[in-house]
Length: 416
Image 1 (cartoon, rainbow, N blue to C red):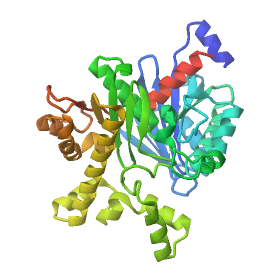
Image 2 (cartoon, one colour):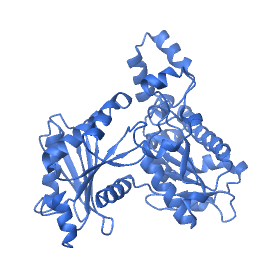
Image 3 (cartoon, one colour):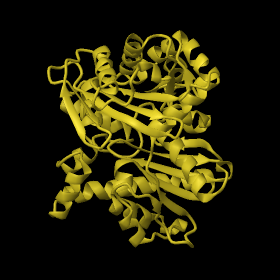
Image 4 (cartoon, rainbow, N blue to C red):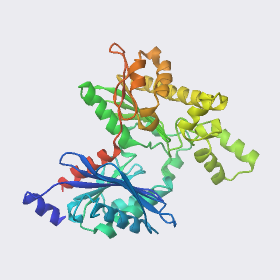
């Protein structure tokens, strides 16, 4: 921290933020120069803890390099990231001292965090405490923070950016479940929501494109990928979102069932003699597009199967389009109207047919889709998908969660 302040005082300061997304067996990173928000380096470590571990990263000319390397744990993964950043041929920096701060994506911040924060012992303790609510994610994030400290040193500031933080403005009537209240008091059982950094980024971008303060707008943001969620943003604040206690809630996804009659869980579990853990595995990893179509969790495969006449693939898509439209319609009512709808993430950005089918349901709300514009807006393109006189503007905006993390990290570090 002392070195950072001295650099600022001497005018030698150039904010380069390393953005980290640590999973149980993976680690994604981006190095962003906040002077102009350019991405200097990006890559990922895969299969951490196995013999087949490797790091893949893009070179300055856009080619991808893959290197097999020993990564028994996250500390060794960070060593691989450090080596890639400092690589004599492909590296983006000459010294680790060029990295001013590190921003971490943290999935579950519970009710503790409604904004990004500087990581200290208290924050780390709360992330650990919340691990039961995100057993696959929070422990991995903790490993990432600890390993980062070990490799980069304790002097570099680290910031936690929570997937759940943006959703903490939800009122009680939206986030509470109709189960005995004691479970909320004892275990924190409530809706938390996820993909918050994505919803925050695209809702702010939508307001910017419309040339209006976000405080004056009602926006529905649709983050649709292998994992998906929809959020109602009224006057810049979240009033409801589809994912719940965990990312399983909401509408069907690649392998997740989404919300359903709770009796389905007990009925199938009893008939099949499944434990709660086995039933959870079915709902999280064997349902959704995969479970209904019987083809794949990858929408490209399901689309190909539907074109070949597979009725279950067609059904899976019809269910998905219907459920997305249902939630958008319910949020229109919840907010008392809607000014704009945003599609983002893998399917939202690259499947024109999904956007068209969903918007067909929304014609009754005043959505008038420009089909030519919709079909042309894929593979990195962004733009308005509706006709000029549409009562609700529909837009495709490519999400950038890493940039949100980098911006928050910059703001927090510069305020120290």
